[in-house]
Image 1: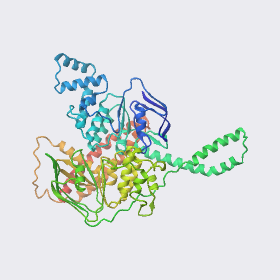
Image 2 (image 1 turned 180 degrees about the vertical axis):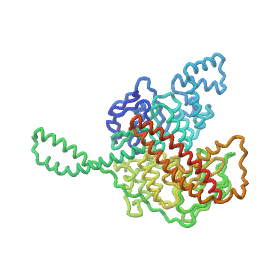
Image 3 (image 1 turned 90 degrees about the vertical axis):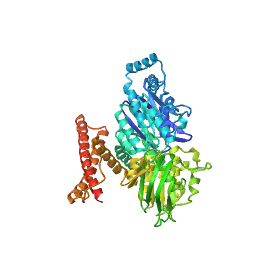
Length: 624
């Protein structure tokens, strides 16, 4: 069933053309992602689809009785309303009934006849499964007190409430603008599983590449004001996009080779032309347009130099911090070494940002001390964004830091530097206030890197950044030789740039794990699975071990452990390849059945190998 159709829609922002004559449709069950650079109109397009703003031209048609649920990037919420009022304010009959039932369940005083009518309506409308789904969503988002006012909520909790509203609304099409921003990894993984279980149409904008791979089966890309469509997940999109760009480059180079010859012909031909000559003239204008197309920026390493880092860098000695009765840090110590690349993960509110603030001496620990080396120069990227005392031009913000951007090899002017990060030259002299939210965060990130820090602290740097900028940031961080601390919920980003995890596990506990996020997550899942497999009446494990328990692992066990590590990695690659086939939109019915059965078998083998790997890892760790 076709839910929504976009026909030749065009939109400009002032004199800036965002997109032109784009067309596509959304049908039941489709799960699409919209990808584009910051400032190219992603949010504007979503607002046009929901009727929040009109297009300059073109038409958006919504099917009869089709309900659309929309999560804006920055939801507007009446602070005087309660969570319940916000969640159920849809005008939908089902939602009104569920609001009444929720009030009844929470002890609201209805008379007996009204209470019976409510439960009878629940039976009649088959609303019990829907009510269970709402309870599941609210519990996963830690939304407990529905009578709490919006004005009392933190920024992260407001985002959860707004996302919960988008998911629990009885909609045919759900549109989500950056749904994973400000959410912890556990919540993001639950949302992935939830969306995969639901039989609904989905259109989302997100920079989370793992989320795209797991949830979406089609990609829409806006590039140079044009819409491109890809039937597959994010991995498939990357492959086909490279093919498209390579073909376009070949066409441009070919047009440039023909342009001079055709231009000479145009100059020699008389004004009165035959029909055949007119066709060649039309072809000339087509070649001219292609030949003058930019090939894009020249790729080069982004390697801004940093200040020298001495032997003593930073020490955290027995740090403790609590607010009222909530313990955030409990006797935490760490000595930073040159080249440390640490990722910080944990649920919202467990103390991640507090640790960074203690390092920056903005918050005092209750106990312990922070010792800094003499050569330490910290660059701190805050969640809150770039502090601006006045509205300045973009180019001046960069020039205030560096008139010339020095690299390890060569240099760039501020104009070249901004262009490298997709700030087009026609906006360099625009004011900061004219930038989109993503462009503002990108500029703030660049100013942080330009100060040549030898210790980088990045607190949620990936929020609102486009994927192209994330790739460039990863490129820089992979070659960065200083110390690095990153708080991020972006699993793909963490896997590529960190090799050491501080996992905040609550009650002040921080687990220090050497490895990237996926390795840590796999170990965590194995431990959880092992805990569930222990019978409830089993005797607790004692910490006392016999001498035989503490014997070193055998040579055979060590070799088996190493072989299993490689085997699990290969099985994960095989699983990813089969998922790519399933998400490609190709394949015969027989092939689809074969791939589906293959996924089940691969998962069984991964679980089997992982259980044995965990058993051996405990033996090896105990002996070290």
